[in-house]
Length: 362
Image 1 (tube, rainbow, N blue to C red):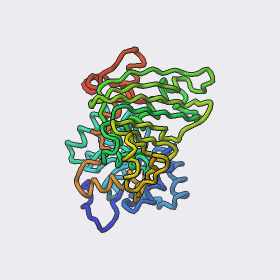
Image 2 (cartoon, helix red, strand yellow):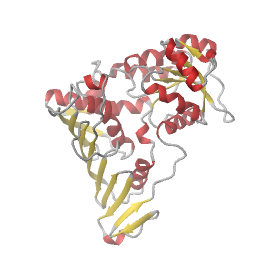
Image 3 (spheres, rainbow, N blue to C red):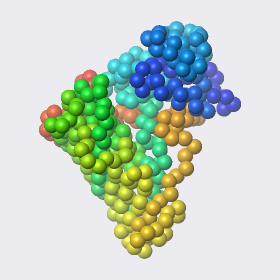
Image 4 (cartoon, one colour):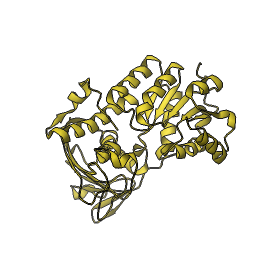
């Protein structure tokens, strides 16, 4: 099957593969997006397909039990991959064979080897591959990114991230060896790269599980990253907090040579080191030398923004911001942290990227 000709006059068409769990709510996100038209839904579970057709008022001739059948019956530009991570590679590779672009829920795949296979196959077939790292596409982090690009606090040197939540998760998360690092911290690690513009060199990590935890694996972690510019990022996270909680973004203190950015509770505050600079920032309100920065306006946020970025990357024939290739580095941070926990040693990012082992991301 050939992909449709791309135009700016009507939405692109997408096939959603996977309706279970998080996939269920994705259907409404697609239906709400002005950039996309739902071409088909795919799931092995026929009852779930029927339920989705009734709930979202989808025509029955748009529902299929395999991607193979869907691509034979409908015209599409892309595939939204929402099946369990261990099956991401199978779905993505079939999509690429049909010259369909792919956007995938994180993680990119179940193993790092499969992640690389997906990225390589996308390139060989001239297709886009994007990971929906939706935490990047929100007003507060985009405001932080803007302040950093304006060089208001100078070169970054020390970053402190504190994440505290207490979600009563059951299912696969409750059974994982490193649920916090693998399933949650990927968002924060990706923000370090995408929002701060810093790339990791090495990782030292420790994780543990408090006696009150309802997780089988380690739900708390402390991770230290050394970055390529010499900065150090200190990350602490917990999924079993017994006190005050942060937002899902966490609390960030970003220190540069000229001041500090405090990003917490969906607010961005700048504290310049030089008092004479504390009243000269456009789009900010000063109180006692602290600058409360107005959040940037965005046409869309979260998953809706992911779909917008995906569509625009196709229409503009460029790499998506959170492309599969870019995401390999964020995943390497996760795998490096897990490896450091197991060995007790510092791990180099280069070692992870060059490893031929099929390290698990689930």
